[in-house]
Figure 1 (cartoon, rainbow over the protein chains, first blue to last red):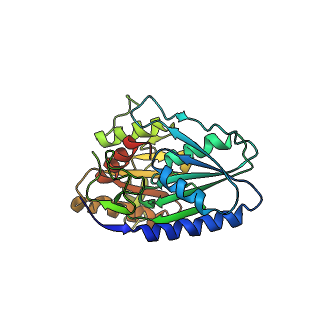
Figure 2 (figure 1 turned 90 degrees about the horizontal axis):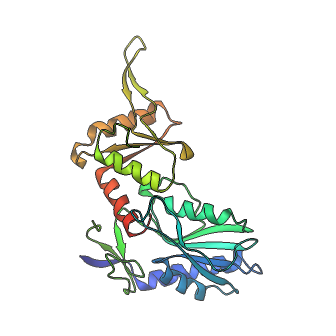
Figure 3 (figure 1 turned 60 degrees about the vertical axis):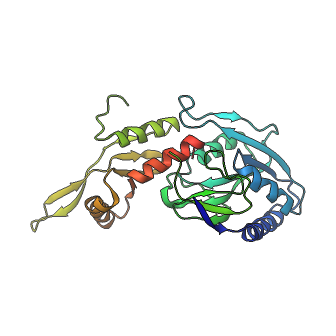
Length: 170
Length: 108
């Protein structure tokens, strides 16, 4: 179901290093709080925090899936208070932008000093909520991507590169 | 939502997704003229399926197979041409399926 990588491990490492350098420059002396949106962003965030050259704090947040309950809610909240902090929300893929916008709104209610979005993949084809993305590693076409933390029915997270999967999960 | 006479199940599914995200939506709230006769009278209209006020965005859902989307594509093209300030997106059946596919994994 998967063939040649869309982006190989070297390309990913290069983009992570570039984003890490940009964050290090943009947030010098500001101790950013990097918040990973679970669960596929964990791999990206783990590499990203090692690519920045400034001190930073790390936390995670997650939301429920469509079909679990009547509406979207935060399932696992951040443990570190975001009030007054410079928050960088790290996502794996921005598609419609609806989940990202929900999380951004919930975090902004807590009056951080600033909030920026960083994503591994930007897939703008079906974008509804036009959330500003400050850092993006790759823009991808309308394909389902696996590897580097992204799964297809629980598989392929361990792959070091990003691959287009032949089908979308039903 | 249950009282809305959706034309197709895909529209009802999309409405449920908007409800999940607590996004305000309106079903077919407005018709736009897209063709006029030689006396300047509108003779053809296009009514997008959804309007999302928060995003000032109209969404048209088409359930036809890609090869048969020509009619919808023409209407969307005319809408954009005659009403350039109107933001409209065409969601194909595949788009709807993929939004749901991803939303079931985690909300998209």
